[in-house]
Image 1: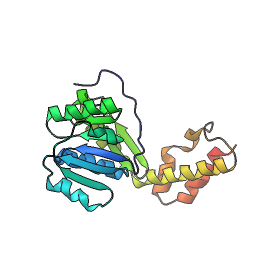
Image 2: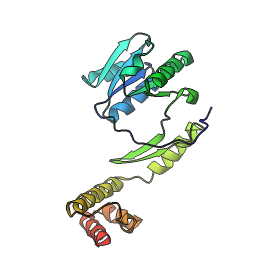
Image 3: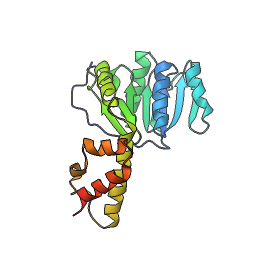
Image 4: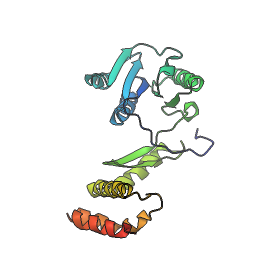
Length: 212
């Protein structure tokens, strides 16, 4: 069932934060891998842990695994949790415990037992594009993400780096970066310059657009 209110999109900073994954199958492995990519420390709890999940434990200090049932209330010790057991009652228990402890919980394929929804994400370096349908259709979100990914080449990551450099330079000059019209330096021509190896020219063009 889709959520009954508009979602509030955020990008969480999870580096070095402890996250719980309840479940040991294919979906749990995918969720855990996504958390690890964000720099989180992941603890997996499951009655049965399949080899792909167990293989994640080769990252000491980042992944720990306990092969046992979920214990009521244990979600309270984490910043974020994912319930992916395939058992609706267990997933619901994790969600209810999260609500009581104010811990955000995502239950795989069960929007009614979620306090956050995972969007479909396309990434290119520091740039990410997230697509959500508020639980209406994960397949549609994935399809739209695929279309976005087709237009996200490595030049987009380079442009993000140029913009970060320009932002730092403006701050060093004591200028606010909030009242700058960044759109003046953002167009497909900039990406074409970077794509053709003319990074220096792209940088000069950006600096000219941002000059007071």
